[in-house]
Length: 427
Ligand SMILES: Nc1nc2c(ncn2[C@@H]2O[C@H](COP(=O)(O)OP(=O)(O)OP(=O)(O)O)[C@@H](O)[C@H]2O)c(=O)[nH]1
Ligand code: SF4
Ligand SMILES: [Mg+2]
Image 1: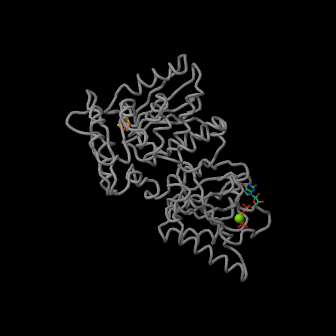
Image 2: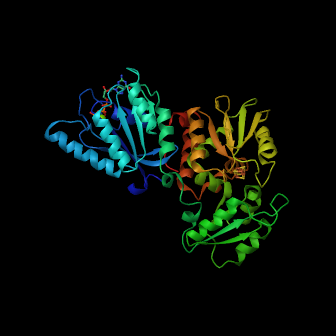
Image 3: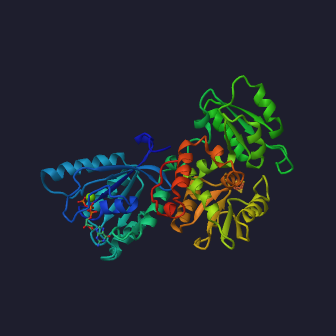
């Protein structure tokens, strides 16, 4: 999905609340762009303001900033109607209240949203002025409604809000629909290169390979599965070239050598950076490799304890290559499973596995955590492609990620540029 995503594919997030509680200020704090007018005068926002954007790490969203719903008079009634319409089409609602301002309006908003089974989060804004009313807080907690405190004008609590949105977003919006079927397309072919070496599990294929085959079938595409030794021959036999060649990262160099230049080529774990994470974010993360200095700390994270291929990839191969590249000793920490360090700030770079066994929401949470700690994150496949000097080739199937990479290189926006950009261009 990208910025041209049809409106319907974007997560619609409605911002609701009385006049002047800070809805527009919150939206501004989230986007760090001044998309809505903020004013001391009550009722500035008369019509819902729609703001499509890439909300990291969620992806394409549409924020709908409504006018205060507590208006009096004829104009006020119109606003109420408009707000109710927004409630009807919101996939997720944020009710904004002043800390001690919760009343009938908020109760009504909450019941309108919960009646529609729309996930909702309550934000007590202006937390610098007062703490939220404990009684109200208690009641919301008992109802299972998540709440948080923010100060929109200083940005306090905005990271929690981002995390809250990620946690509440319906699964349909979190889970990427496609691994590679969208790239290959109906009636087209992909060639999957699967090394069968001593590291391959006996008698079966591994999950990313199986899922890729299933995804191609779902997309009415077809595929040929070969070992790297047979690739050249297999390609020569085809009447028409395949749309895409996908290889295990370990066979990258041979596969690049054996695949004609005009055929798109990538690796399973780069496909998984998009499927389970956010490709643009992880592409930019790979640029941090150039900024590593001796003694920097690098976290190597595997989502499960049985990476079936290349057990030594995270412990031996990547550390060895990075050490050579940097020309000095680096401090590596390896972790496995669902524990992710609370404090990431001492790391310069996180290199993650393909996360095939992890759900996307958890992986996106890790991306968010890294961004909050201002630590770059990339994955195995991207690191390997980068190290082999075939990064651009491996990104050609993903034109917008490639464009982001080229732009970052051209303008040298990394690292400060990456760290300042709140909303990345689409992947
Ligand atoms: N002290 C304090 N003031 C805030 C905070 N957030 C917003 N404000 C101020 O509250 C006023 C109203 O903010 P807006 O963002 O325009 O409120 P709104 O909910 O969009 O208002 P309407 O569009 O009229 O419904 C502005 O003066 C903001 O500067 C906050 O966290 N703390
Ligand atoms: S989740 Fe990560 S470590 Fe586990 S098998 Fe998949 S890629 Fe390997
Ligand atoms: Mg407003």
